[in-house]
Image 1 (cartoon, one colour):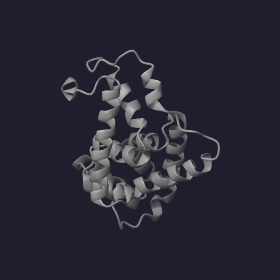
Image 2: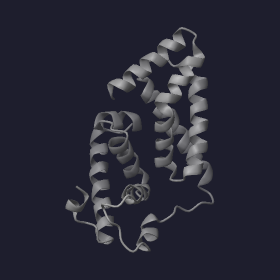
Image 3: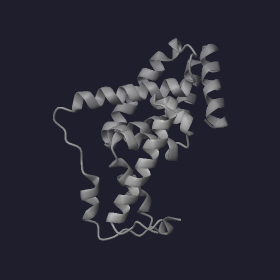
Image 4: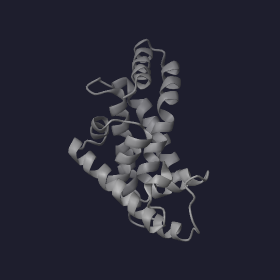
Length: 189
């Protein structure tokens, strides 16, 4: 956890304690809105659906904030609510939806140039195509810049599981890049 997020958490809780709820809401949204959306996007792999679930999560967080008891870090509590909302959304939608095959979609691409401006979008699509058990730790570790222990705490997994899944995710991404003719890591440095 960065110093900025720790001070943000403390200020949110301080504003709540002072009954300055409007200011606490502004601070909460400034600090967590983008992160909540990215986590929802990682879970759900659909931008529109992720927006809806992120909004529902933020409302639930806001309504639950007065009952936050401090047994965990505020950020851990927030990520737990988001994870639970995403799991509920996935369960309710599983009946009729099939997951997109991102790799098949990318196979239609002529080639990817690691130096191009579209590279980040292609990498994001590859990460979106990972199984959930790999995608979630990748998003939190690489995109949210969380430590392995913080990722483990947020996901409720042992640290060893996080490390294993990160390693397997990297191997899977490398294999997918190699299948597209882009497996040479020196191209990405």
